[in-house]
Length: 267
Image (cartoon, rainbow, N blue to C red; front, top):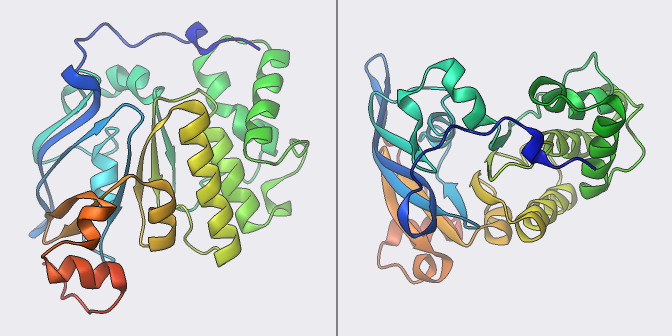
């Protein structure tokens, strides 16, 4: 199987010290008069995993879209492996995005393509591999998500959980260093959600991928994340380990994690 070093490399850039892969500083984002983010800051080290929690509408997915240049913050800075991505043009973002995988909330599969062609899409866009090399990589990724031998199927033939796993295989096709997950278990039953959580955990452990998971699914977050960030009022009200969260003096954090309290909307 070909190695991903056949892919064009990101231009040389100084690495962030102390093993930090992603550094986010003072992000602000508004839509019209509605201010969603009001100073989000955090770091993600290589091999680390962070879950971003919060009520619906508090800006979790908005935060995620700033991290690979899908949106540009009004203020603040996102730095990936020493590269300040919000200063890059769309063309300059391409080699950075090859190193950042994203699993969208709905999976975002191409319904007119087979499973093989869906998973192969980023490989055909970003490598010069042969069809045989691509087919080998696709099958390897489908095996990783426990769906071997389904490359000939169409997305319409798959269950919701299978579609999500195919989308995960596609997001891993280029062997990213960072994976971004946007509500990966939305619309799935508890058993399937648990299976998705185990697959995310497996990619972290087996591939050494750093992960940032936006979710409202607390069991998933506890499964896949070493640290959590609680987003409220446009910034992180809490950022730390599960042990620190469970013993936090902040009653809002404890109540949210226990599902006990109704938190008023932030904005």
